[in-house]
Length: 110
Image (cartoon, rainbow, N blue to C red):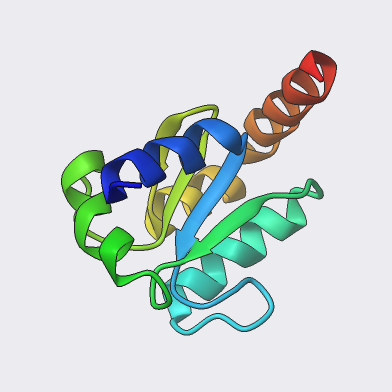
């Protein structure tokens, strides 16, 4: 499967998807750590892709997303943003309802 197809499939298959360095339990950079912590505090499961283990995705995703840095949070197929945006949304109380409603819509569709 081409890398771009793999990225599109990951984004469409996962309601909440975080492209990050490392894993939520063992992040490999501070920004990925902060972003995954905020997501975990939202209280809903989310998928992640460790871009350090997937150099093809690490190379292609910034071009596809038109977003140069990691982590990248995708919800319902839309790029939410990186660490600063996610943390700001979380602190303002904006991230939690977005994640909750996306997960509820996904669960209802199953």
